[in-house]
Length: 135
Image (cartoon, rainbow, N blue to C red; front, side, top):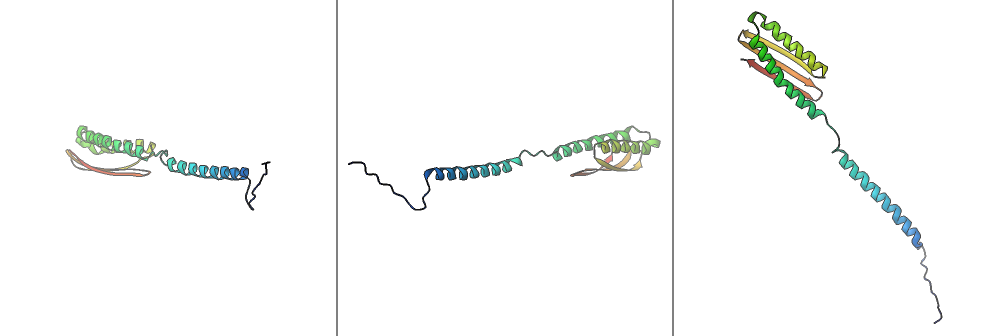
């Protein structure tokens, strides 16, 4: 048997090298698409939100302001009570404004031993309204 060689040629069939190249390009496109989808999915987890941090600091200011206004009412002379409380409210309003927090405050003096306080804190994404009485 001398070596008769028969080849089978199919019409429209591509050589194996072309099929490997097509497979490589299609695989690269699919892998790149999957990586892009996964990166978009995980990018939301790495986003830094400062809103919670600012809310926590503003919530911390509420207690400090209440304590300071109560101390002002407790340790001020009766004839200077209104002036002392207004001074404390203005002090806090200015200091908080430096940090981007707006404070509006009001008080009502019923007697030397009875004061009603009200203040609001607001900033971007945060609002708090607080009412309390001394004593």
